[in-house]
Image (cartoon, rainbow, N blue to C red; front, side, top):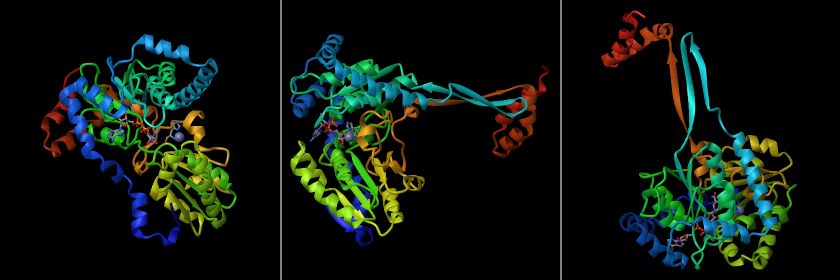
Amino acid sequence: MLYKKIKDLTNGELDSLIERASDLMAVRDAVEIILEDVKKDGDNALRHYTEKFDKARIGAIEVNEDEINEAMTKIDPSLLKHLDKAASNIRKFHEAQLPRDKWFVEISPGVKAGQKTVPLRSVGAYVPGGRASYPSTALMTIIPAKVAGVKDVAMCTPPGPDGNVNPLTLAAAKVAGADRIYRLGGVQAVAALAYGTESVKPVDKIVGPGNVFVTTAKMLIRTHAEIDFPAGPSEILIIADETADPDFIASDMLAQAEHDPNAICVLTTTSEEIAANTQQRLGELADTTPRSEIVKEALQNAAILIGTSLDECIELSNRFGPEHLEIVTADDDTVLDRIDSAGSIFMGKYAPVSTGDYASGTNHVLPTAGYTRLYSGLNINHFLKYSTIQQLDRKGLQSLSDTIITLAEEEGLYAHADAVRLRLKKNE
Ligand SMILES: NC(=O)c1ccc[n+]([C@@H]2O[C@H](COP(=O)([O-])OP(=O)(O)OC[C@H]3O[C@@H](n4cnc5c(N)ncnc54)[C@H](O)[C@@H]3O)[C@@H](O)[C@H]2O)c1
Ligand SMILES: N[C@H](CO)Cc1c[nH]c[nH+]1
Ligand SMILES: [Zn+2]
């Protein structure tokens, strides 16, 4: 773990903290081989890689209705109640993000310009399932697609060694409204959704998080399908002053560390005492937590960085661009106003990242590896596209004609000018 004052960081230390997208491309060669094999050999390659990585010999690639219904019967009703509660909060939040179906503005008399909203035709949701199973991610990816009106939503998630998909993930997919489910994980799932195979229908866009292999695969198939953004191994950065509680900080760092050995957890604080106590607490928790092995590996990438002022901590956070940002200071609103790159922001000591991971309604599929500098987390717009519209009457066209004809002729595009002249020459 890196434990230092921000001002003492070497350029190399700062670069490896900020420029972490290179971790994804380190697995590029291995990923490309799998992508090519699936493109060439379709279902055969899917079965081969599922056996290799998930230790499962699968027959049917698509999960059938009977399996889904059977999974539903296996789930404790009280568990289903919690799934429903999470689903309903996620639905409520994403419905609030919906834009208007169609709108117009009068640019000038007789000239109306507007916009129409259209859902994508088909989307593939990748739901991870390697080191943990992620029913919550089925809700986070499928619900917004359905709220946006996407007709065809497929889900891919890795099977267990018995070839079955985790029953709660199947239940979550059903609650969320998935149209098709494939027992496929990793690079092979992304390839199948992008290229299509005998059993898998290709989709227009692939969304959802995954480990470095899944995320790199998404970045490499973009000539075939659009993607949301790189959503790789989990990250947290906490900005804290002396008012924060080191036990809470350590437990929230642990909560993201337990996802993946490649997870990245950072605390930046103005308090040397908070820094030291957090480090000590992390050490204790790492030994006793059930996912100790993963956590200990992830904590090797962790950092505790002491700033001489909150300004220094905020600047570091904006350069890092964390997937999750927690702000725990005496004046969280003022810090919030200065944040320009963070996937999802958690304010105050009663808002651990776990709230957004499961139940506050916001989406937990978020850019990692510094991509919050470019992308927003998963939201309704990832499932929509917009057509602009213009509607003019004769007077409206007349009012724009000189401008259009002059600019078109300057560009040497005479037919553009004539398209206007012709209409105005003809009697109504
Ligand atoms: N950023 C986000 O929004 C977000 C949200 C939830 C989870 N996550 C992250 O998702 C990830 C889930 O990872 P996971 O591993 O548990 O599940 P996963 O489903 O992403 O990956 C499992 C698959 O990885 C493939 N794989 C494993 N080793 C491989 C190898 N050596 N070569 C090629 N392929 C290989 C296998 O096909 C396997 O099915 C974690 O990193 C977690 O932090 C991120
Ligand atoms: N923290 C993860 C995103 O990095 C999302 C998640 C799902 N389940 C638990 N947590
Ligand atoms: Zn989490």
